[in-house]
Image (cartoon, rainbow, N blue to C red; front, top):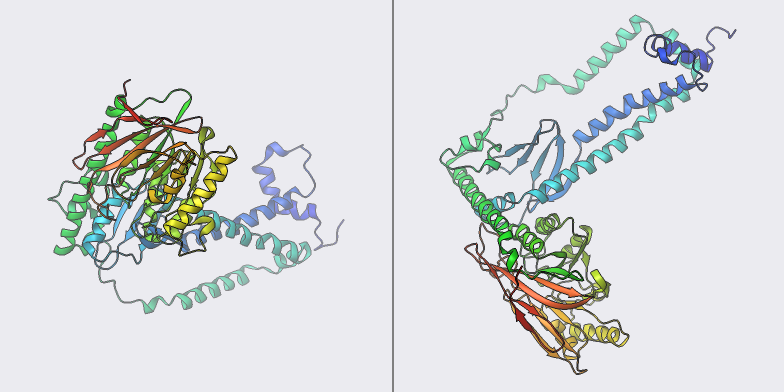
Length: 541
């Protein structure tokens, strides 16, 4: 017999869990369990009782900084089943049901828009293709949840640690010392301390106005609301005549953007018979350039690529207008449209100033071409570099003053060394075709792909000094941009993507597809690229 107050592992465990064992676990009777399992279970329960509420509290009371809809933003979780967006003091807050118990609150901070009208138009345009932003908020909340769970798990270890450190004998003494009177006194002390900390008597000022939410259709009853936007709610207390006009303008832009680009996606299958059908031993890449934040065209570009059998993406730069971090939504949209495409190659254009665009593209899984030769699909050898007017110069990025002539000469030297070694470059990707001119003149590359001009130029054959033929081709603006601006509910000018066909790593054909400003597709002829010069043919299926 153990002396009174001395508790062995078996006694400690059996006293704590005898009722549970007797009533809740009859199936354990007669089975051999490892010694001390009841103590282990007690420690696990103690850990969970601390870890779970701590993790939940951390999740609901911490936030994460990110960029949403072109704003610096703070995202925090909620349990009201809504995503609530705080638009600042002059615009009504809005919220949208999530369809789950977990919601989010997004507080938008500074941005680059110089007027509320420009800002509201941007909101409407991004809302017409919200998938990338929804995915970003969801992943932000998931990261926050995982971090909170980890924090809760670590804090929860304090409970079993205390149990183990105090020891069985001390716990037995504590149990004998606890009486009803002492427990009641401790409870009173805790309650009084809580009241003194909270000081509810100091909060006698009633709020100016309670939050009142109503469907957006009730806020602007004279405007036809698209079905996808009808669950949206706004704070009615902040709607004035001026803000109502802004909201009406936003809804109108949203509706026109939604209908224009969705109609193009729906119309894309009709051009399939007019596109070149690649042979079984050919692969097709989709060339885009000069998107300039027009995320509406991303789904259209993908639809055209699908019709043409494209299996990889080549981005010739100018995805943004300024290269600022607020334009992350543009790259995220392109990533979302081509999320299941494994091979995606990108460079930065002259408007993608700074390091942000190339770094963000790399984080999203694009292969950023930086002056080194990379292996592409089906034996294709790719070389590319960002525009010298941006800082994404790869292996030359420390040389901020590099000129077109310097860049062109270095690219040509590298391509010609590879060609001499029997490792010919199938495609050189640059933003401005001038950067690939010397490589073509020396006959060291098969094809130079570019953008920048917002107009299609080529394909044009060049016979190099070594007698080999190469081609140059400049794609028009995929975003339909006028200058560096493409955001809007419709195209500002004709938009273009190009299907590039390869055989065994060698480019063998090009076919542009243009979307006109009125929403019509124009399929260009398929131009066959051969060592003797280009020839065109009409595709048939």
